[in-house]
Image 1 (cartoon, rainbow, N blue to C red):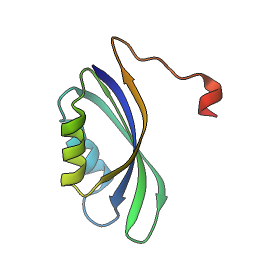
Image 2 (image 1 turned 90 degrees about the vertical axis):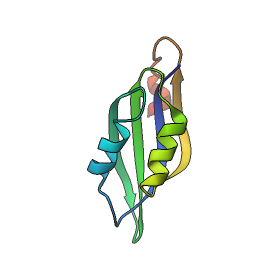
Image 3 (image 1 turned 60 degrees about the vertical axis):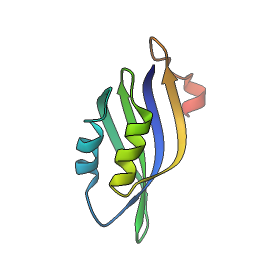
Length: 94
C-alpha cells in the first residue's frame, strides 16, 4: 500500500499551471494531499518536486495524469509503503 511518493518531475512552462496540475493529481485514486514545489525554471521546462500522500495511491494512474498534462517523471526520490509512514532521519534530509 503506497502512502507517500516524492517525485522529481520535468513539467512544461507553457500550458497548465502547477495549481491546475495539483488539482488533477488530487483526484488520483488514493491521493489525499498534493504538494508541488518549483525547484528550477528553464526556458521551456520547470523542474518540480511533487509530493503526494494518501492510502493505497495508484502510481500508474499518477504517472498517467502527469504524462497527460505534459509532465515526465525524472526520478522517484522517496516512497513510503505499508501501514504507516516512516519519516527519514534528519541527517538524510539536510
